[in-house]
Image 1 (cartoon, rainbow, N blue to C red):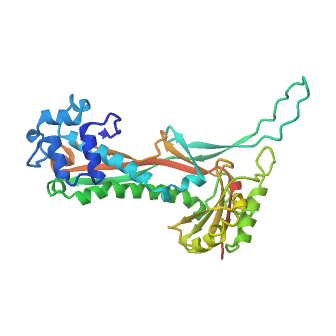
Image 2: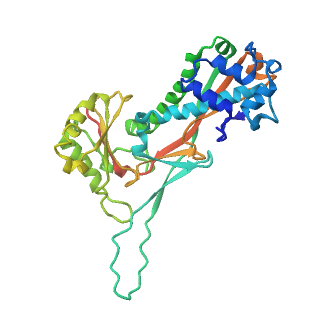
Image 3: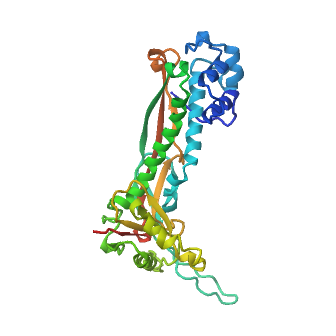
Length: 355
């Protein structure tokens, strides 16, 4: 199995294939022939030009040059394009506004830590000693990582027929699928209202963060005020400040825009009190909405990524004399994305479940 790690020392093959996926070269068949010397597009190593492959694929392939060099180079290009496509989807990166990403080293149960606050700092007299502060306590919320992914194939026919459009769509659609899966995973904490670390639903009357008011400015400020009045564990201080995000279904985006966006020019001096509106396209309940505090100010949701890898990886398992490349004239690529998450603290989130 070969893991495509996106070698920073870009070979001529990397440059050529990146140009293809960027639409700067029209022909995938041309790229293949230039890189391998296999003018008949046979997919057979015996019909390739080893000297040309060494020249274009670089030193990394010199010692173990075989027919998988093309597969790995193409897979590396697909992975780079997947990452570039994800970077070009800011709307699907909105989960970062309400959650905190962290690196995780294994699939063992993880413990997201919520640390309480300190009380006010005491005054220190001239030449006086500094007293030890009361260290805040901490609580844990457990979760485990899981893998998400699947396989896709590039066939010899696609290459020979120069089906450039279909091949270019592979990284674009893989990127959208991976980004949407992660996006929905995070926003589902708000949508599904799961049980959290204390055995109670995230949004619950006992948490003081569940209402039933329809969206308007009064209801929003009531929710934001309820969050602000929550107290930090340990210090007992109110949360108070912190930017708020108003999370709504598409059905409520016009109402949210009218209430909080269109009038901001006239009330710029009060902009700190206004939320940033985050419409969530896949939410189907037309009335429910949430307010979420900035996770940099108040813990909300933690998302752990295996080895800190926040972007999906592309892997190929083909060998020159067996596997799908030999038996079916196709290269199979696997996309893998490993992450998990949990609610760290309910206090920074409020939901109105409108009946």
